[in-house]
Image (tube, rainbow, N blue to C red; front, side):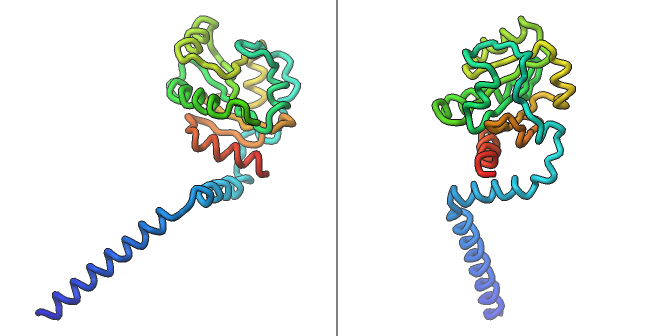
Length: 194
């Protein structure tokens, strides 16, 4: 009976040692390793990123309406290594949730080679302006005069949709749905390192 209790005690001790080692291993993974793992995951899925816009060029979009920028969308794209273009609408709840994080991301990357840009889709001027004012959106926001042509050409049907564009204007990655700053960083790093 006593030997059985000793065996059970040894099993418990071994179990807790394994848990401790596992936790230690997880905690010792550096930020660099986590970033590399995230990039590897994105690279492994490269062939599976099947959004219609991936590989297409966004350069020379001449029908843009500039809402709060001194630069054209074309100039912003060509002057930055990565431009994160977020298609949004004022009536879209995920857009409302992600906008404060997009503003924070844009502000924390001001002066770098990364630019956040918003493109307003399917809104009245009044609703759009109220949305931009209520969130105090500071990054450049654009609209297109022929919105239907743009949404049809690039297959933008769900809001929000986010494109990751290189300096040549090529859409490298696309993400549909509410996006987090961490995911933006992973996609931006992917575009920079490809």
